[in-house]
Length: 201
Image (cartoon, rainbow, N blue to C red):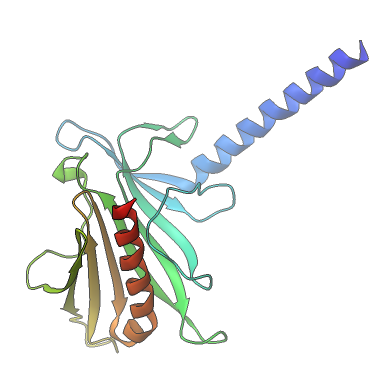
């Protein structure tokens, strides 16, 4: 009898936990664009909160001191009531990086997406593929760079550097302000090497 009561209480607690988790996730996931016939995917904005971010197998090799802030995703399926979505086709994530441990934080934007599954309307883009320069190509992985001018008199940033790393089926775009280039370049190189390794497995 006591065993049945314990099992019943445990089941109730577990169900309540799932309900609270669903409510918590729902409060932190916002639909930017619904799925339609012309746009066959959901565009979701997700805030960085505990228990909210599973590992999406991101290939960007973020450093330990880079803080993940939030992300937009495009995915085929989304259940609003349960705040559940299918494996994302594309992710645009914002990180906070610092030039020194006690200095201010600056935004780093990273796009990751599959190129062989989703329609073009469900792909993200930080920039066009025009005016980019091929830096390196190795084992089916290509590395492009381009600079996008920042047309704002109030901004101290002259341009954003955009690194694009591509395989036949996967793409990573990394965007950072000009004064962050030296800080981010080693991470780009590390990610490039990681993609090369994944092609040989």
